[in-house]
Image (cartoon, rainbow, N blue to C red; front, top):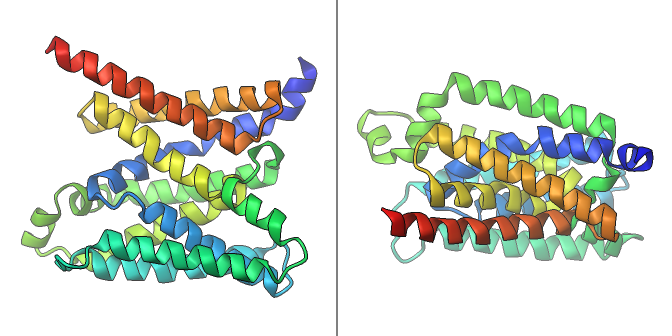
Length: 275
């Protein structure tokens, strides 16, 4: 028992503290119907880290973090500028997919020039929550706390541009500016978590709990509460499975989130029949 506590203490704390803001942002992304924007931003952040590694910096260096966030800001600007344009023949989701693919390919090319390219690529995709340090957890939680405060202060504007974009435009809100701020803060969250959990885990934590919650409840408070419970439960069960059966931690959590989605879908069907 003491060995489990020693090994799993900080990974467990990370799974309890960090997914909360991911669930909240995931609700925004699902409502905006740009599901893969988080995956694309995560990959762009990863590309920035690849550039830093190629320049000789370590993955844990401050320079690597700054490179990741700098690339993420570029992605945020692109998404903010293209979101509100009504190009029926070129939907924004197509641009998001192109950015993801190009960033992923560029990252592979850059990592092929480093000595530990294959290992770095694996960490970029699935991370390793089991090896997270207390410093990483507390630093990331501090960043998320500040971002959460900003979102709370400007919650009405952020909610309006995500849930009522037509009303935001009608009221003269500077939609592109608020969109850029949203994506910049979103990118900062993604950049921080990619270094811990990898691209795939970021995507799963952002989208799966939000989709599960939307299948079962409607009110914002209920969406947040249920999404957080699903994210927390899947994280804890995934960590236990990874430790018990010697599995990759990130992949185990993602599979638990997938199972949660399946159960939520089944529950939604039964609830619909009862109405």
